[in-house]
Image (cartoon, rainbow, N blue to C red; front, side, top):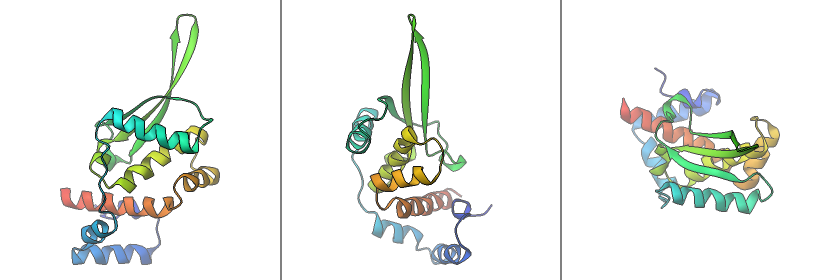
Length: 165
């Protein structure tokens, strides 16, 4: 199994640098030096408040969120870091729509910046369904260093997977 599966789309030179860090046993050290700040968002209620604050700051006119939770059923190692869903229910004679965001529980213990990155990603899906140019522009509007955070999150997931094997 390729230890760099999360970095498959990146240039070979960059992958070679990461392989070197892994061989030297320094990947965790580099990430810890860069992202030492933990977050205090532990419960689903705190997560909802955190997401709502970001949404209110950047996406005031978007649809309201019905639910935001940590989801232990999301398998990070199977490419699901978070999900956004729209659920429609018949309530009496009316159709009620609700938006939900679910974040993988691995982010409970991840550095604060990685939680912000995944929340920004899922919030951007409220306006843009596809991963297109407009989607990534919205992400960088909410988190200017979004692309660096995404790359470093991939390094973090690589480190977690290496520790499990």
